[in-house]
Amino acid sequence: MSDEIKELKKKLLSTKKNGYDCVDEGYETAMNAYCEGYKAFLDAGKTERLCALEAIRMAEGAGYRPYVRGMEVKSGDKLYVSNRGKGVMLAHIGEKSLAEGAQIAAAHIDSPRLDLKPNPLYEEAEMAFFKTHYYGGIRKYQWVAMPMELHGVVAMKDGSTVTVNIGGEMGDPKLVITDLLPHLGAEQSKKPLASAIPGETLNLLLGSRPIGDEEDSGRVKLAVMKLLYEKYGITEDDFNSAELEAVPAQNACDIGLDRSMIGAYGHDDRVCAYASLKALLDLPKTPAKTAVCILADKEEIGSDGVTGMQSAAFDTFMEDLCDAQGVALRVCYEKSFCLSADVTAAYDPDFAEVYEKRNSAFVNYGIGLCKYTGARGKSGASDADAETVAYIRSLFDEANVIWQIAELGKVDAGGGGTVAMYMANRNITTLDAGVPVLSMHAPFETVSKLDCYETYKGVKAVYQAKT
Ligand code: MN
Ligand code: MN
Image (cartoon, rainbow, N blue to C red):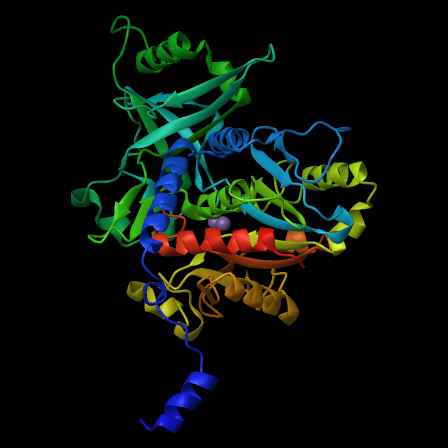
């Protein structure tokens, strides 16, 4: 190649490369330290409630305190509000007034899982089971024949709440959903994946040992209920006012001989939630603009509901802070920027047919920007404007963040959504960005450590932006 062509190529063509070709010595130590913290965060927060608790524990450790309406709000203050124990909103009040806008990162801490139905307990063939109703977009065939644990709360009529944890501690018994043996699976194997495992067969096996005498009926169910009563003081009717979630009984671990990746349940979207939270807590000094982190619930079922991103809880939090500074909320919003921090699909060579290679996110190529998400011609996308993408390009390059820009998959292959449009609908300039994930929404998802760390660096750059 002539020097002239080399020069031209360098000057005119994109030079995106593998992140490992861009980092220097010392990088790996910082990246690994960050990822060890992330793995511990995942293990502590397998449900939105547990994740919110862990986030608050970390925030308080970093000097954040609960915000109470009417409190003074001044530069340097570190405040948070828990949204019903299932979401958290945090703010590090900046040097500038909220009239100059806030720098926001919004991630979600709910993940696909199996919720117990309101009347879950039954006995069949002298085994006891829980009926479940899946939450979020799952591929049902992936959730059978693997150990599960159960977390959540039972709210009692007297106003007290019982915390349930079955299988979460070392040595605990686990639960399981059984699957059909291949010997008898001839007919089932002919069915499409989506219908091979009907939702009503996702029943958790709870026990098999009867109590009482052989002439008694329902003895296994009764035995299980007795154990639950002894441990938690609950009766069958108390399930009516419970939120119990079955999640994979598997802790986060390194993946690959080179330990370059992390496998875990719930990377979507705790990988961006952790990045958004940790970047906020790690800010070395008071940011120029107020830095806001929101960890929302209910994204996987459309962001509706009182703890979802469409809830006025976020507006109330922001309005309270604005009121304390004598600023109108709409003035703050129109000057604000939001990074909708959510995962994207990583290019998977085993399923190359659903990706468009020139516009896919690749493992180890850094945080993935998505100008738009959506499906069927960008439906359900906020579709950030060119100026917004330029703003982030410039911000990330300045902060040496390794980034890429991609779509979720081929135009006609499907699609997905995030909280971006709900932020943008508030008149907040918003862009999607996050970690590329392999096997997204599976009980065990995989991400690259480098991409996790670059997402943290990216969010931090957003918080620290001067304009
Ligand atoms: Mn997500
Ligand atoms: Mn998701």
